[in-house]
Image 1: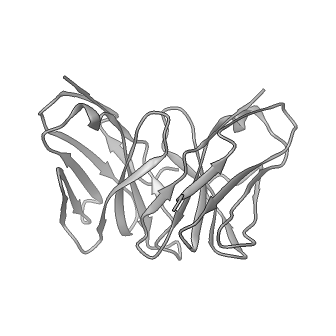
Image 2: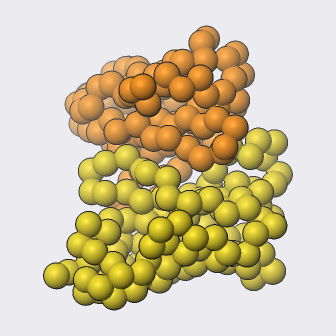
Amino acid sequence: SQQGEEDPQALSIQEGENATMNCSYKTSINNLQWYRQNSGRGLVHLILIRSNEREKHSGRLRVTLDTSKKSSSLLITASRAADTASYFCATSPTNTGTASKLTFGTGTRLQVTL
Amino acid sequence: NAGVTQTPKFQVLKTGQSMTLQCAQDMNHEYMSWYRQDPGMGLRLIHYSVGAGITDQGEVPNGYNVSRSTTEDFPLRLLSAAPSQTSVYFCASSGLQETQYFGPGTRLLVL
C-alpha cells in the first residue's frame, strides 16, 4: 500500500500563480522527499526535508513538514509553464533498516497554463 | 558521469517469455532499487539492494528476480512474463545523501 497520499490529484493554475500540493503519510519517517516527473521521463529529485526540520527552501520551492500530523506541503511560487509535471512525495520510514528505501505517493498532476 | 542508465527503452514480450531489464550506475552508489509505475499511480518498489551481494524484496516482488554481483549493475529478471507486468520500470540509485537518481525507464508491453 502507498505510504504517501498527495492532494489534490490534479491541479490547474495560470502562469505566475502559486501551486500548493499536500502529502500525508502513515508511519514515522527519517525524511520526506519531493520528486518531479515530466511526461514520459524518470523522476527528478527536488528537495529533501528531515524529520527534525519544519521548513526548507530551494529557489521557488518551499517545503513544510508537520510530523505530528504526518503531513507535508510543497509550494511552488510564481509558477511557469515549465513546471507542468507530476509531483510525488516519498517517505523514508524509520522501520526499514535503510534510510534510502522510499515509499512513493500517488502524485499530483500540475498543469500550468499561459 | 552517465548517471543511471537503463536498457532497453521499450520491449514487447509475449506471455510466458522471460527477459532481463538492465540497470547500471556510475556514481558508486551502494543503494539501488527497481520500481514499476502503472497509469495514474505512483511508483511501487519491486526489489532493492543495499550493496553488492545483498538484495531484498519490496512491495511487489512476485514474478521478478534480482541479483547484485557488482556495485554498478542491478538487473531485473522477469521469469515468465504476464500481461499484469505491462508497466514502466524505473531503476534508481542512492548514495549517502539518500536522494535517489532515476534512470529514464523501460516501457514493457506483455501481450
